[in-house]
Length: 166
Image (tube, rainbow, N blue to C red; front, side, top):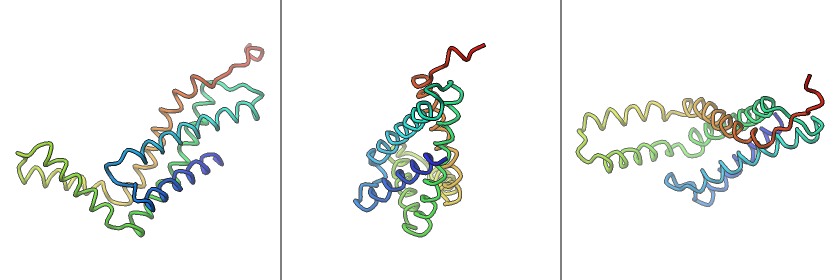
């Protein structure tokens, strides 16, 4: 839990720095790339540290997967609460800007779209672009991505104690 909190605080720090520097552009890949690299490094570091200091140098695939997923869960809770606060209080127009970008993307991908279909697509987007949905989906999405990363990381960091197998 502690390392998940540290990872979550680091992700929030990156988000704040990106916002302050104006790099949080919705079309930029830099924040996403930094977040994913940090999540992978945070999960791997936590699992390796636990394996080497708390578990006598050994960890099973399942234990590594559980630990990595729990780190991802706690970090996504912290990042999602920051996102909720950001879109609710700090930058309330942020969601409207995303909806406008979505409308532009829809019109670019299908210039022949009818007004009715465009309104339907935008209303669906607006429904899920509410702060409370971003909070819930951020936690679920962050945990799922962390689970996927943990599946892969656990392959490489597992060490089974052959003397303890009966």
